[in-house]
Structure formats: structure tokens, C-alpha cells
Image 1 (cartoon, rainbow, N blue to C red):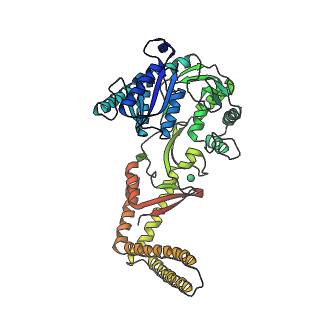
Image 2 (image 1 turned 120 degrees about the vertical axis):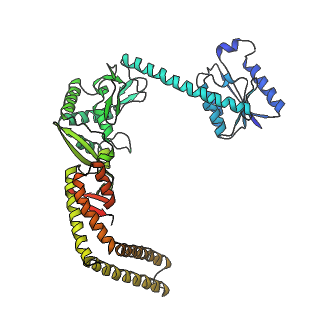
Image 3 (image 1 turned 180 degrees about the vertical axis):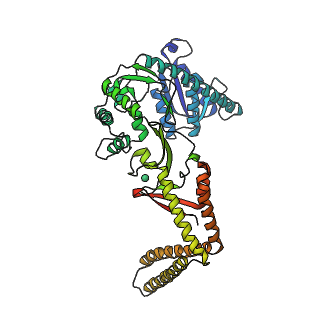
Length: 470
Ligand SMILES: [Zn+2]
């Protein structure tokens, strides 16, 4: 076995007899000799505390472990390695991940024995507890920092850089100013979003688009006007709890006047998205944006005491990268009901004469096309046989033609199935659908839709293309 020795002495310890670095190392070497282990590395952190793992020699040893330089790490006592249960747990995990054993020469500690494994379990539980304590302490610390007007967010907010203090990041700050200027000049969020995601404009981060949420968060962040805040949370777009807000020690990016103007406008324009289960929006789940293919989801806004239900393209809502405009639910409903009526009329005409005339025509056209496709396929094969085209070219043509044939055949099967008795059934379904629809609750409407509709695409100018199930 290849062993690495790790030892550490703090300045205070070095004074104590029996704790000298040399004495520790000698015990470790003796131990390895007794086990017939070969010492391949010695790592000693002198004058370092064990409160974290930011120790040069420990880091160097971990690097060597990654490189597979040893089979076991030997220490004099566990507290040489670390005094933090959390760090110990993470180090043990790290050793295990790299298939490196761990031994303490003065303690019964051996990860290969049952006792050792039990110990690891206890360490893990303690680490969890410590993590929670750390969370509580962090929270208290963050509140205290906020009280003192200091930023407690850790990494910098957009518009600033952070090195223990916030400093204005001038190129990002410019974007923040633009956002507030645009907003207070009356531009809508979607327009601002489109401008921010314009490739010629600086972005949030390289290769990262601005989202609607990021934009809203920016507009509501008092940091830019020189305040610090702790405890700001939103759940489903609504604020919860009361955040602590204090004048900050950092340099503001926008004036307090501009901030207050934006706040005022926000209140005036306030829209309250009502988070209802998707069940209350019958068209969500089937309605899709024809421009980008994303699902369009239902939402409610209240403006001046009136509430409106509408559907918005997911891409457009989250990043503004799709130009699809939101559409009101009554418009979707109107278009859908007229499409349904048209569909039912077509089925009525069709079902009267058994197999519908227009369907008969369609069937004949499909059969002809299928015949032609098959003929084309045999011609390509002949061409290959005559040496006119290469094998590769043949494969290419066959792939395309075979795909076409497969689609035609399945279309013919579908038509055959939809004819006759089934047609009558569908017509009845469509008819009862129309009668039940006005009485149905949103969630029932959703079920009704699922029985008849596969997908619906919202096309430009609010046109609706319905893909029927049958
Ligand atoms: Zn879209």
C-alpha cells in the first residue's frame, strides 16, 4: 500500500510537548513501517488552523489523490485533518470517491471496518446538524449585515461587482439605468425584454438571455437606489413576508427620484397574475405557439377592476425571444367553436353517404401518390443496378422515398378507420360537445377538449389551426 502522511500543527500546539511536528511524523512513519506500507508523500501544514480546508499542503495532497498517487492517508489524530465535522464528512467522501483509505494512528478509526463505517454514519448525521446550525448563524449574520447597510447577498447583484463590498460595474450599471429609464418612459416589460435580448445590446451574462423574472426582479430591487434588503421572497409572483430594507453603504446606480417614479408606475400599471391550477384554463395543454412550438399557458390579469383571461407563449413569457402576442381566452374560444362547427358539418355531410365523398377523393389521391412513390423507389433501384448512381445516392433517395411511403400508408389506414361507423360516432361527439361546452366548468371543458383535440396552433393574426384526434 502506498501511504501519504498528513500532519498539522498550530503555532500554539508547537509549544506543547509531544505535539511537535517531528514527533508526529515519527509516529506516522513507525506506524506505516509496522503495516509494511510504503510512504510515498508527506504533507505538513505548519502554523495552520483546522477550521477550514484552505491549507496549502492539504490542497496539494488532495490534488495528488485526484492523480491517484496513494492508496491510504494516515494521520496522527483526526483533529490534525480537520476540526469541522462538515469538512471531515466532505473529506471522507472525497477519499472514498477516489478509493483512498483513511487511518488515524491514535484512534480506532478505519473506514474498512464495520466500526469505522458506523463512525462515518455518525459523522454524516453530525455534519447535517452542523450545516443547519451554519444556516441559522448565516441568517442571523445576514440580518445584522443588512442592519448595518451592508450587502448580504454574497455574490454581486447585476450592476455591481463584489469583493467584500459592492462596487459599481459600469457596463452593467448602464444596462440598469436603461431599464429604469425605459420603464419610467412608459415602455412595457415585453418591449424592454426584447431590447435587452437584442444581440447588439449588452446582456446579463454571455450566452444568457434576460428573462421576464430577471427583469421584474431588477425593477423591484432597491439596491440600485442605494438600499440593502434582506428577506425578500416571491412565491408564484407574489411577495411574501416583510423584507428588511435599510439605506446601504454602497454607491447607488440610479437616483432615488427615478426609483420612486418606477415604483409609482409599477403600482399604477399593477397587474396581478392569479396563480390558478392549469385546470382552470381549458386551452392550456393543447394550445401551442405556431411560431416557436412552445406551449401557451393561461393567465389572468386584473386591470382597473376587470379581469381578463389570456394565453401566452412560454418562450415569449420567459425570454421575449418569440414575437407571439398573448391572446385573450374569449378569442381562442370563439375561433375554436367555429372550427368545431366547420368540422362537424364536414362530418355530417360525410356520414350521410357512408364513406364521405370528400374522403373518398382524398383516399383515391393518396392511393395514386402511394403507387407513384413505389414506382419511384423501383426506378432508383434500377438506376443503381445500371450503375447510373452510387450506393450512397441510392440510400439517400430510398430514405426519403421510404419515409414518404410510410406516411402515405399510415394516412390511408387512418382514413379507413375514420370512415363508416366511427364517423357517426365522432359527429355525435362533436354535436354533444357543442351543447355541453357552454355549461361546462373550465376543468370540464379541458376534459372535453382532450376527447376531440390533439393540438391547436395559434397562427399569426390570431388564427387557430386545430389538429383533431379523429
Ligand atoms: Zn412562441
